[in-house]
Length: 263
Image (spheres, rainbow, N blue to C red):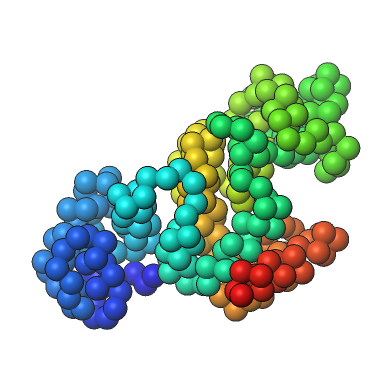
């Protein structure tokens, strides 16, 4: 969706009117600006009368929850997400499937799928002025300087590792897990439009729909949607999964998943 303001003409203005619940016209006039300002004030957004990403997103969320209060993802969520970040819904489905291997995003109610990364925790402790080497001696499977998968427990077992880490420093621990449908690292809470890692975690624990919103915001704020738009799976995988993406064939998996949903 484009950022639009008074004086803009086009289909996006009609879509805006639909979401605001006012008579539809294609010209963004002063009356529409007034409605946008009212909506922004009611929803604690910057009340500038300009419909940008944050306003569009809030409009979409409110409209969706009014029409369907399901905590799980529904087909229309993929449709509006595609509109929002300008790519095909099949591409978003592909990312979700590859990151969760087709699972729901939760291990059980209130407990998202997580993976605790001890090497990230090591760096997060250090950045907070806490000597990680002291804790490494006591908890070698929780605090370590380099990435390794030998300490992964998988599933709910990851929560026992998280709880130990939270006992050392809660924020650092939460920033050291990848979580939810899109397996987003807690360090990235700001690019999910969250003000703190605890807000990020609370949303992850709330519902599949909230995990979906976080994932879409992560993709948009990191400008990764440009790769989805042009089906550049290798560039997306490199940015999303890191330079070692080829060892796990993430680009191939994304392309195959997209083709499946495109059909």
